[in-house]
Image (cartoon, rainbow, N blue to C red; front, side):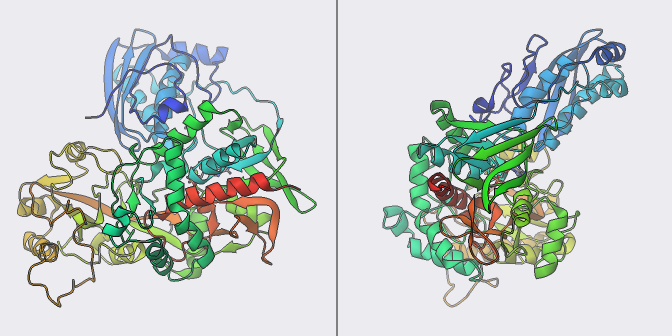
Length: 630
Ligand code: ADP
């Protein structure tokens, strides 16, 4: 069941990021528009059109539409107006969820459907508008006329702002930098092109690799910072800068402690995330990446000095005498926003997973993937288009390893998102192809798994697991979706026997049964002396023995396809996160952290290392930019 709470007018990001799934029950009285919305003031002409369009058969109507996930839109009409809109949804906290809060009010205030999709939350916005349009049609209203009713956009004035530190991008790395700079006593402006914090970080499954060297947890698993280093460096084919990899792994645990000090909570224990290669991922208590932003928001609520400039897109750097002193931006209404820094500027705009042109250009250099054209989906938010990389390139920054683009074999068949992914820990599942056969080491590298998937029929696979992770079936996956809801929506499959499961997903039952039996033999030990898994898999059971083979019915399956996930190339930085030019010299005043940077993860990023990267290098960038004086 989707959660459904009563909507309060104009809830702000803080509440959105509290992770509460919010259904929106909007009433006409609640007309105050949240800070993040486009200006919604109807013109006289629009009012007239709305009146003409508003002729309904009074009543309440519902429609089911798909945003990031399925949502139900329920609209109440009287004879001449939309009087209430309720959304029953599970849109992403910090990204789609704030739109679910603001858009129903805007539609009611406007009495029209001519609103623009919210940048960064296009799927959610479009789904809401489509759902309301469907209800309008059911109520006998004129959808086309309502779509013509648009809000009047009042152009904002050009403005010029100054802070000590300017951060571009309010994802994980940018917010870690912003909070750190604030802790250093600096005033900070964060420029964010969408209407909210989060970026790709908010969409992540939440796994953060960090080893507390010498602790009981690490010792019990034979893990260490050195082993984390080795796996990260080797897992990227030794292409990562050893110095930066060292910094990543050695500061990871300190990053966790810093987050905890800020109030962030983590679940006990560690797990192996897909492509993480080992049990060292910490999982926040809050779903997906929302815990990070809830924490950063809480810091901002209790400390002055960080100004968020949402719906503001950074376009170019302001360079004076070779020093980056600020950034030119475009505001929401096309107005010019000039932001200057007394100290440094931190670039944290993320990668380019949603920029098909850049994907194709750089994939052509390495040919890692058969294609990365528009037919290949991405897990990324639509805002992740490489802007910062292009801005830095324009002022002479060195770009490094741009062809190292990571794909995951875990995309939703319709959207490419990670939503609907049923797996929790590597040890609990196998992958089978449409023939019901395993085809790859499911505990291995992300690139090898995805390349393996490209060779399978229809580039499609099924994740197969049992009830160890879902004892009642009502537990949630890593994306806060209840397994029972996924099954009810036809996004996952459930059966009492493997044979029935095979029938549901249309694979040969004998092959599926054989694949599971072989996997179980390895999980349960048995007579396996000298027998290696045919695909080289070594991760079969976890240390805590939660997962012990696929033998506990009911069984589950989930369909998955390849999807672009992370771009490991980007601007070259040094250990202080200074951005380097093509001669290896720092570009004064400019620092960078997170996915916008290149050369840390090499050819293949370990699962669970991206969130670590945002925290470790975000903090360094915040500190370096604070210390920078020109
Ligand atoms: P990271 O993991 O490196 O922090 P994220 O994807 O989490 O990266 O966050 C990057 C953020 O940068 C996103 O919120 C995105 O909307 C924002 N962003 C991208 N391009 C721009 C731009 N040109 N101006 C301002 N913000 C941007």
